[in-house]
Image (tube, rainbow, N blue to C red; front, side, top):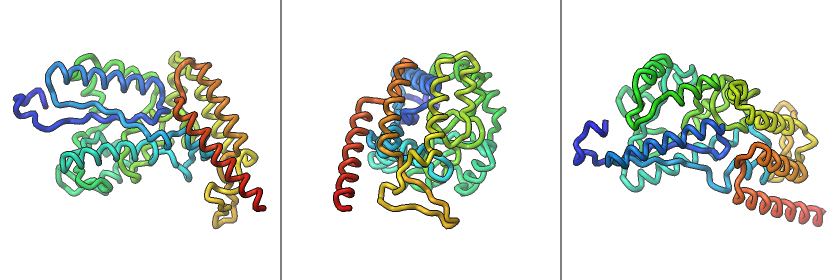
Length: 321
């Protein structure tokens, strides 16, 4: 579309926004970054007003800082603390920045009714019969859904028949899906969209995701010959097992309260400090085993600062008791 316009008519900047939770499936992240570089290079060559952006969670809101630092149990369907902190907040913050700078933005989303019954319901809920819909949570943001009526078959047929306008080929993307047998875990900008992450279907998402019973896309990569990801699957399964072991959890939540459901079921609190220390040691050992970064130094420093705060709090409570 931009190439079809005269240079003087290309007045609006276009932001191509991706989200990296910092625990993305490694092959998916590699592909995403590669395509971003291709788009950016083509935009520079043709003088197009395109900006490629990757949003990431705040250093204090990453998966490892919350899980190992604060002791949050790994997410499940009833306590899915990850999506808001790692996906919604970073991307929404970037969109708000653009609204502040420009006054209003149009957000193009690749959602489709045929993705799932949940997605069809979400699309219908915000459909006002116009080409543009107001975003439910972001003031100054209008939403345009250009492929909302396409089927999955339509999408694959188009990608197979057309080359990407920025150059290269869609073949790496097609191969990625073929290897994983998975579906995408899309950019999320509002909490009503969160069921798209961690559904029962096989999806590309965080390799640490314990909302699903099995990470079938990562298992697909291993079956396709990427054996180096096998240890990630085993570690992810261990996170789920630790979450379900009450001996590894404190009795009280971080706010000091004991939680009992209406049905009389006791819900334990965060991981113990001993379990958190064990998790960090095992994660660092896993990082050395696989040979690529799984946790950053800034995250480790924040984790240890949180441990010190929790240890001081527990000592103070013990002294009062």
